Length: 206
Image (tube, rainbow, N blue to C red):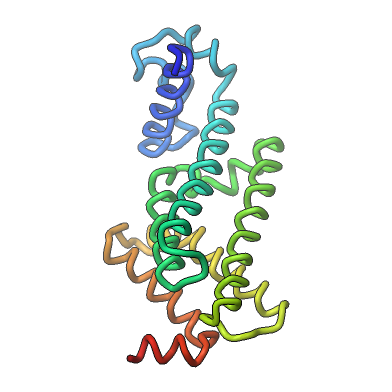
């Protein structure tokens, strides 16, 4: 990694920490530069403004999320209960790492058309990944055969819970802990229960 690449990476990590602590509106590029101990001019060499920093963080989020998902599937095998639950926990830890973006999602994408376009593309890709996981689970006999429209609805249910579980906890005044994260996995299990095949149910009950 070159010096310029290291500086760019430090800018993003510093911005993430400041945005998480204070929110994006309260943080300027000058705040980020000061926290790093560099000049504003040095920061502007890498990013022209705060919007570019937020877009770069989102690009990082997209890449990290897909990489972590692939690693879980390679380790545990696609379409299994363990993979689905581990993926949910991964997404929640990921959401906590980038919690400013989840908290300000609507405002951020509405105020920046370019970011909105990127978010919509990422959202659709992630939803397709969830749909593919359900297809694999059906193919492996973990989930019973269900009509395609129902598969689409199930995929959206899973993705909505995964995407907004932390928001739900914080809005309800609950702390984000291992216990509240596990409760999210129990909700996913409960959602999935009516769709499990007889062999999957036998394995759970046995």
